[in-house]
Amino acid sequence: MPFQERSIVSHREEFCRLALTPGANIRELCRVWMVSSATAYKWLGRFVAEGSSGLVDRSRRPLRSPHCTDAEMEARVLAVRLAHPAWGGRKIGKVLEWEDAGRPPSASTITQIIRRHGLLDGPRAGQRRDFQRFEHPAPNDLWQMDFKGHFALQRGRCHPLTVLDDHSRYSLELGACGDEQTTTVRARLQRVFDCNGLPWRMLADNGSPWGTSGPERHTPLTVWLMDLDIGMIHGRPYHPQTQGKEERFHRTLKAEVLNIHAFADLTAAQAAFDAWREIYNTERPHEGIGMVTPASRYRSSERPMPGRIDPPDYEPSAHVRKVQMHGRLSFKGRQISCPRAFVGRTLALRPTDTDGLFKLCYRNHVLAQIDLRQDSNKTVHHVPEQPFTLSPV
Image (cartoon, rainbow, N blue to C red; front, side, top):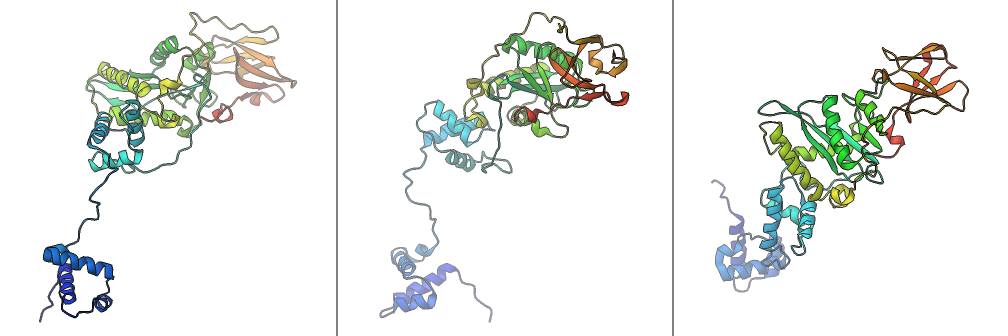
């Protein structure tokens, strides 16, 4: 005889019929069927009122949710999310607070609203993450600059140049460039300096046109920055965390612009960059700076872009030498190799407190140490650029 399958509802119905038999001991039935008396009386009540249909499992969702987000607020949340698909619960909540839309839901509630409507994506979307952040104490102490990876246009390729203020996260430049050449970068920086003034230092990676962390780390672009009294810092090789803010900015740019739009040419890309940069600086709350906008923390530099650059004027105690062709200068009978970016320019050798040890300088920037106590093959000791010794970036 084949076994007969029985549903959980049929088991519950059998229990109820036995329990409703005159003289039945419900407590004993509960012990035999291994159910609590509360569950048993719940089944009996439903069976008497509704029959077998009352024994089907029901949702545990409460009949009333007095603290549920109202439809109007939920619509506002979805409107902001649809306008900015990469923004999460914290940013959306802050924007609703700025719009004076009443008391917005918590960030976690907003995330649940987004998830419920199928607008939350990504492998770790909605998960809590731990961050460690460092920043310079004032605007224009340090600017970070880099190229975002180039991408194809319908006509040509775009190389986005990004410049970011370390303290405020203010986007100073987001340029749709056709190449990564020195002349292109210098023209872009010239406009930024004219508009915002000069920073004290700039941080870039080890590549063209910024230079490297090795002996030839100086390029015509970095020499021009030195002429403007801007210190140039290079990140440690193979250590992109040094420019973490730029890397994070590039991720945001990709999520909110590059993954959404396709561009015909550089003009179209620049128009989209300009529109998004305004949102990024003035409307988008930034988690790294306490959910305020970068524009609220940034102010222009008090160091204006000079109208002209005068040649260096060294003090009388300095030994001044001109860098000859092939990047060499003569000093106390020795030929000293210098970065070729300084060919035709005058450098100063400044004595130190140690006899025979000199600092090789361009203007006020120390390039290397010249140690005449060593044999000729070990004369030049390049000064390392270590941004982590200055302050966390």
